[in-house]
Length: 445
Image 1: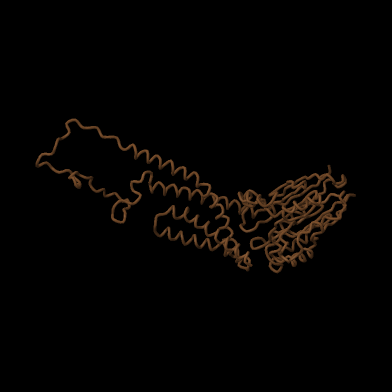
Image 2: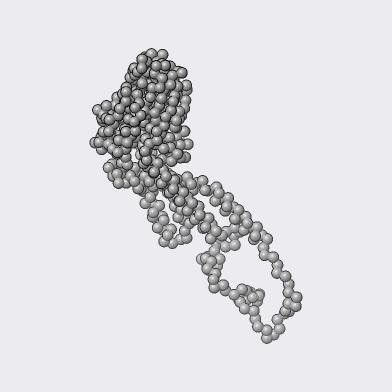
């Protein structure tokens, strides 16, 4: 409980700091003191509160928060990235402008040429020059009626007046230019990402050779999908589209590799119902993902089984096809360890005591499971979880946790294929990682 409270506090702190930074760059640096700046501060506070409110609210039935909250989360992310990237060039521009101003100040104005026959000392009766007279009686320029420069507390020049390189109007223009560029670019990228995420999944086909695959099983095809993420923003129509797409492939096997739902059976059972229409020659299979453990894993295991998918919980199934045999194994997600909701991932139960001459394909939600799978001689692991990064450049952070982010890779001699997933989590945005259904074709050597 203490760990959860600490994590929540850390998240709230990070969100607050991000919004403070955005307020500074988008509001404070681009406006003068006044109503606009005050309104901007209020908006920044409300948006900062919207993020945790959305995360908590969508878990408690306030689904109307999902669209505005998650869209702002995506826009916030890209504003942050763009403004951070712009820090360097804007700093360089400020430095160049400051040096130019200092150079001009140091050089000073060129002396005016003396006029031949310039008047000598004033004689009595001559008119005095216009303007004020200083302490020594020297004339000063007349007041400039157009001079609107700010003054200090005592009516004198502002504290920054006379500082080489200080030009408030130029700095304001630079800040506004950076803010406008970041805002328009972030909005455009987010809009593109929404269109991609809400569109149909892309079909990818990949051929993967397995050294132990019998020649008679050459070309065995596995339709692979993960991370469907039924929830506040995705419902029955999403499932129907995916099922129709898989059925058109006429695959030998169907593998649903976790993260089917973000909600209970009572909330999303109807949305998952179309899964009963999945067609394949040798069966459809399912393994749990981490989100099943947030959504009532026991209920969902029973529900998925009722819909006709075989749930592989630390077990394997012999696939006899075309005169050959392949072991299809599945393990619970690594999230199960310590939850007490289901047995943790047990690789020995799923992969131990088997015929080592047979090829084995493992279904495991997270690519990181390959480190353990490799110890049992797994030929191929099919995974999801990463969403391909979902929103570039977030994929760079995913690499810190998972050995493969998207596509085909290898971990300790085990081939690992990671599909991008057909849905999304959180923001309905995908940039650089389109939704995907993959047809994996196994090839004999």
